[in-house]
View (cartoon, rainbow, N blue to C red):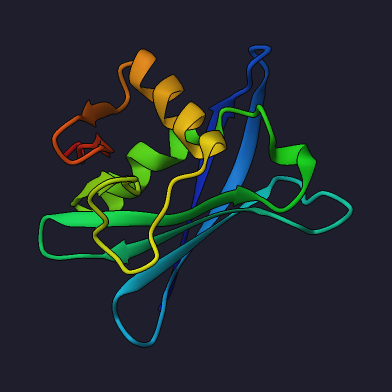
Length: 140
């Protein structure tokens, strides 16, 4: 199952960029892959990707967030897309934890921690020190 929607993100420099988000639900029923494509598409046809594991009825966990092409860096995509993903799934979106993993092999890189800290400073996410993860609540 695939759903698509368009979003506009504000870059670090204040420019607005349009993206097409393709939400792909995998066959085993526990993961969503969100591929975020530039509008118009960039020459490499690469995309920004967020992979989310559905933990339970209330929680979804980000398992990967990355830009396949440097074009997507500093474009404000996490600030816009992660809250939309939480609302799309109607679940709290949580980061990986360094101390209390929800999944086997889970880890949060320093780059990811920096991104989540930026979202926290902007009031988009909160840090849960007991579980050592960041959270974004869905907006209904």
